[in-house]
Length: 190
Image (cartoon, rainbow, N blue to C red):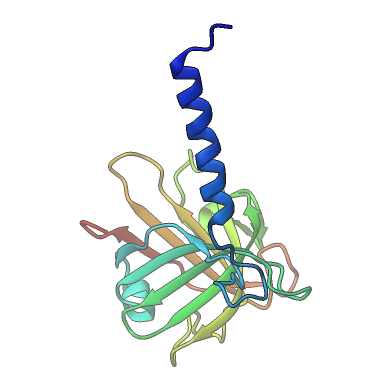
C-alpha cells in the first residue's frame, strides 16, 4: 500500500487538533462563564443638524439624530426602530417607527407635502410614535408631541431634515393637530 508521508502527517495533525479541542474547558450555562442577557442594539451613526428656521432655533437649537434597532424585551415591548432626537436645549425625544406617512396624506385642508414644504420628488416620509419627551421642553407649543413625521433629503448635496410634530394623534387621526414645522441642515462633519 502506498500511503504517502503527507497523508499520515495530515491525519496526525487532524487527530491532534481534535484532542486539543476536546481538552479545552467549556463554559456551560451554569458554570459562571459569560452570559448574554440581551443583544446590544444596532444603531446607525449619529447625525448632527443645525436649525434652518426660527421655529427650529426656538424649539431645539442644534439637533443630534440617532436611529437604533432594538430587540423586544417583553410582550409589551415590541422592539423595532427607535429614533432619538437630542436637542441643544436639553430636550430628548424618543419615538418608535410606526410606518410611512405618504406626502399626500391630508391634515385638514392641506397635505403633508404642503405642511412640510417638501419638494415634488419627495416620495416618503416616516411616521414615529413618541414614547418619551423630556428635558423641560417640547417639540410643540400646544403640549407634548404624540407623533413625529420626519423627512430627510436623499439628493446629493442637499442635506436637509424636516421634522413635523403632532399632538393628539397620528396625521390621519381626527384629533391630530400639526405643530410648527422644524427645518434643519446637516452640520459639516455631522
